[in-house]
Length: 213
Image (cartoon, rainbow, N blue to C red; front, side, top):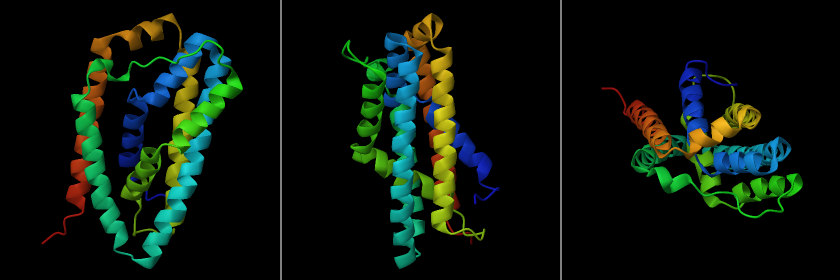
C-alpha cells in the first residue's frame, strides 16, 4: 500500500526524523539513564502509542478532505514541502543547547513515563500537524490503494521504525551514550546534517509539484 518508487525517499525522510535530537529522544534517553532500561522501554511504547493514534487521526482527516476536494492533496503536498523546508532550516540554525532539557523529578516510574509520553504527544497540536503535512507527501495516485490506506501504511512504517529505533537507543544507552549526547559539537553537527537532509527533501518534493512544460 506504499508506492515502491517513493519508498526509498520516504525511508530516508524517516531516518532523518529519527536522528533529530528532539523532545521524544531526550525523554527516552533521560528516562533510560535516570531510571533504567525498563522505564525507557515504557517511554518508547508511550511514544509509539501516541504515534498510532495520530496516524489514525491524520488518515481519517486527510482522506476525508481529499474525498471532498481531490485538489486538496496537491495543496497539502505544497504545504508539507514548505513545512519540511522550515524543519530543515530550524535544524540547521538550532544551537547545540536547544535540546538539552533533562527529565525532571526523582520519583518517575514506568507507567508514569508511559502516560507522559502518550499525552505529551497527543496534547501537542504540532504533532498532529506534522502527521497531516508529512505523510501526504508520499501518497501516490499511481497505485490502486486509497489515500487512507496509504496514509495508514506510511504511518505504520514510521511508527514501527520509530519504536525499533527507540528500543535500540534504550538498549545501547549508557555512559558512552550519555557522554556523546552531552557533547555540544556532536549535537551541532547532528542538527546541521539532519537539517540539510530535510532541506534537500523539501526542495525535491516542492519541485515535483511543479507541472512539466
